[in-house]
Image 1 (cartoon, rainbow, N blue to C red):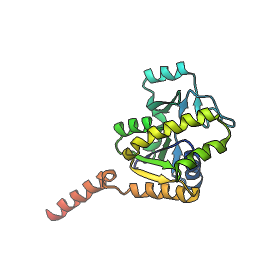
Image 2: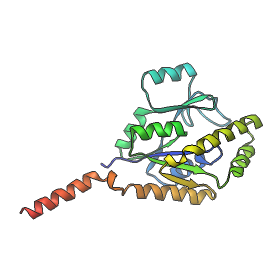
Image 3: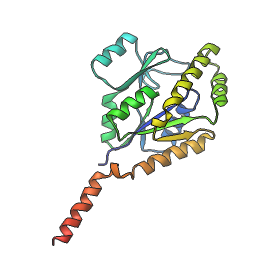
Image 4: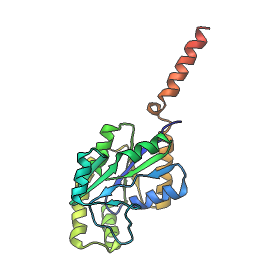
Length: 208
């Protein structure tokens, strides 16, 4: 069985990453999402074990010490991490595993798993980022501005991602992400077994 693709989706706060992930899961059957662990408090409507594994800072640091994360990062005063065991098992089953993580963690994964596909999602403008954060109505102006300053820092490393996806129309954005993943499956670096088989068949044919 061919291994699945490890898809990493990052983006500015308010970019619609969560909406895109939900769209991929509901419209296509080849995706599964890795649930991250975090030390931040749940937002209204979020459930432990469904949206995140909500753990204490002490527990998270114990998991780090036990090398239980494929990656982890600290973002706006909280830890976020991806459990290693679940990701590996899903990839081995041929599933395309989505990691919705921040840049620090994304680049950690890329260093360990260079075959991973990195996509950075962003709204069409910086003003739209602010507008979307404001529209949420879940955070103070102080926290919103903290996220905007974080976004300015994140903009400095967007070039390290494989693809940039503009989220203006969410339905088009979801299709673009899926189509990009489909194309990535045909990359020569992901088809070494096929290339080796063709070489072997030519060798056998020419030496008959």
